[in-house]
Image 1 (cartoon, helix red, strand yellow):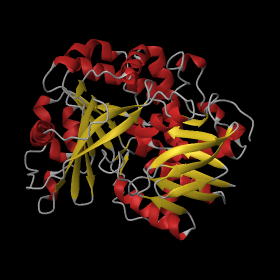
Image 2: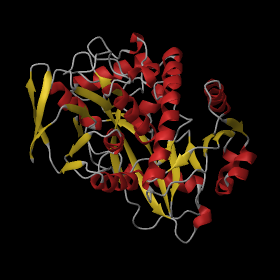
Image 3: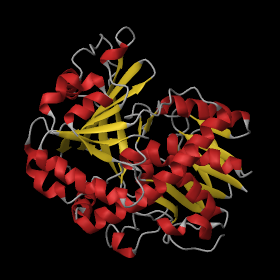
Length: 437
């Protein structure tokens, strides 16, 4: 069986790796180089135990401040875009306790699988990707926010996560670089086994290893159209020529809806624009954290990757806008100075922006879709958890493709209540039940 994977970000590459491990012939198509999109400068955290979806009931209380404050980490720029409005309304409908709890449970199951798959891949390929397992602290600055976090911890502990709420003093014991901020925090959630890695290095390493194992790459090739034959896709037309295959996997991140519409699918994926900077901490290694840190109030994450500190955050619903406003980079620098004042940035902070492909519920779309071609599978909509979930969704997709659905894909299939809208397919894992073509 020949599978064409559309997309060479971390999700597409993980899919290609798992499928090649199963002995399938694989071709990967992308308009850019591996990891050049949302994977390239992401937050670098592997958040296996901290997966609470953005669609949370607390959003309603925070909404006025998040949308109206000039320095808000969440920004909405209304556009004449039906997809933006439909996504936004579906997102607000998902902001309830029941949906959030169900999504959390499914994401935790998937993340646990993904951890096993990712670490098996690291052992297999011995990638140089600045991988570390130093834990994670999510810092809170108000008693109300910490109490709400404690409720989420209780939910996740019941689902198998190892987490605890800790005092400001304990925070500093775990991460001395936070000492300067101790007086402003009320506590934190500590997850001891969380990890970090440089996603771009993972993508580059996977690309090289997959080439050696016989995977074909068609890079710098824009997908221009799809050739259908009845209920199946026969080939995709690219600027580098035609690619034929038996099965196709749509893993184009936030660009997935464009190609999906060409085959009659309305995919509930919209870009959440994020930003990052990367600081060289060479001569002052003790001024930057070793434990991954998330500032819950600022919605900014900090992750050590080798001799660099990745600082990332914000979520903007502004469409496919690739500009990097200077004030957003200043905000990330201000957040860094507030928490880690001795981590001085040099002249080059490597500003970056990327489009996280998000579904309203936070659950990725994986597998065949009822209204789509019978040989097209989706693997998209991972939001800010692409690096965390990539190897889990790759396994689910491979099992569905190879007829092993009963083994482990079914537990991730949510009920119909998670359907994002009356016209959109369910934002879910496992796609729609269908016999193997």
